[in-house]
Length: 116
Image (cartoon, rainbow, N blue to C red; front, top):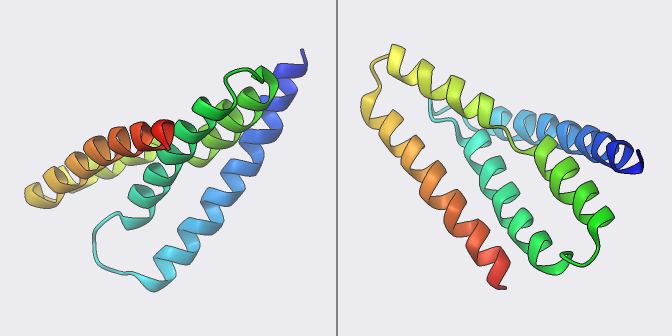
């Protein structure tokens, strides 16, 4: 039962951090490129890689920070929705760059975080 509480608290903190970060980035960048979501997902992937490597023997901390905080901070659904919007706008090149950067960058940063 404690793990559910840890996940919920971590997710709430992560979601608020994502909201604030998105507002900050979107107030300074109006480019048509989903910069905020890309950077959020990259940071979350890097942090999750670091946490997974460091907290493997501390499951409650990994649940709180990894599943909760990182899960609440990152957002696959927003990325998918932004990809769909780019396709609907016929912004195919932007879509391809965004999807490629998200996937390759996210996996690479998670691996880097794990190895650091």
